[in-house]
Length: 148
Image (cartoon, rainbow, N blue to C red; front, side, top):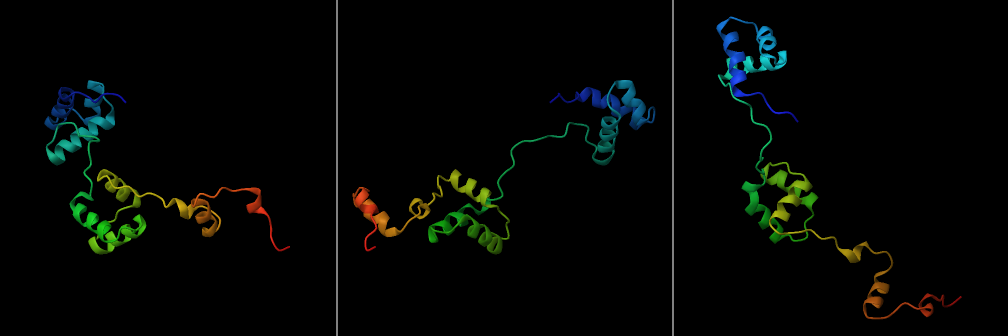
């Protein structure tokens, strides 16, 4: 991305236009800037009186920060709440629309992580899982069909 124009150049373009000596397009051609830049600089000066560069980017503060205590309290009261349910509750109770990603990022900043429940993701019956957890090893005997 290229650098912005200097403040001195902006003022040299704006002054003759405001004084009525040049049109915006003439000033742009004379000082070697684009027509659209000269038009925008002069329009902004006439509307707000500002001649400086408009800031870009920067840090955008979180809209969840004022509600930090409430969010932590809800998680303390309902530790099993899903982010989706929390998002819905946050909107209904506080009127703030927050995505699950925003909430997750907020909690990660507080050192709280939402881990998946690994045993629920496995297939098979719970009985077989508890059988294996007790230290039994799977063998060919376990896979034989009985009663046929």
